[in-house]
Length: 358
Ligand code: SF4
Image (cartoon, rainbow, N blue to C red; front, side, top):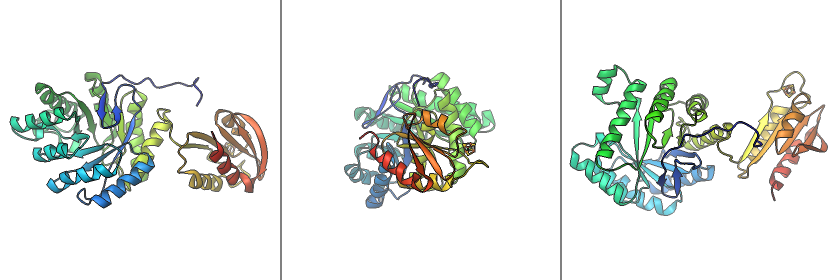
């Protein structure tokens, strides 16, 4: 979209480096996902990460439940190019092994790993290797005393839990932190992150947890993550879907593209159709999306059913189509350049997009 449109002003946060990706500051909001393979199955895990990389994933999290998984990270890292986050719960030895294996970030809550010596050991190892830590608060795992105090995993309880973890890290002189507060209850997820953003300047990782199957999960995530991003809150995102993780990456970029926070590949603007339609617009848009779905260059294409809104949208897009009776007017950079038949629209657009910017 042209510069004249409203732009979201992002809250300034500290910079955290995760391998070659920067989170926070003015860095682009990164899109993350998580593998669904057994981490110790190196071939399957690498294959899934490569598919995710191809889809645009910028940071990948892997579960590290045992030593085999922690050691596998070493081999996995050699075969991929995006940073790895090791997801650790409770066992500090897995955190140490994951750091040793080259993890670029650790997701762990220091308060869950037991006695002081263990916390110290993990934070020391992370500091020595410049490995940041993500503190991850989930509505399902808020500490018992906070649940008693607040009676349920409220926004206040989760913020208190996050601040407690931050304090533990800072007491040991460690503050290379990213924080996430996730809940499957969208209003609570929004409120807790907003409250947290008022109290810390650490970068925030946003996500609606256990959001469900693709359609429902994408909508829940778009509302939860999108509401915060609109307020300038959030530095990296993960959409959690009960589906192939590639769908999480696609949904993540759609959220960022919708708010004009990132440009990523083809952006199709199309109308819902109505009684004025005189072409098979739904069929045309589906075919264009299928043929051009993998395009990496940033191009906006508007495909509208008639002259009511077609020319107006076309003026704002890189390439525009305003359909008429079994025909279409084509616009480039707002200027009419051709009139073609309905049967030619798909191929014409595919050709134009492929040539765009060459
Ligand atoms: S652009 Fe035309 S066909 Fe499409 S919804 Fe609007 S009025 Fe109907």
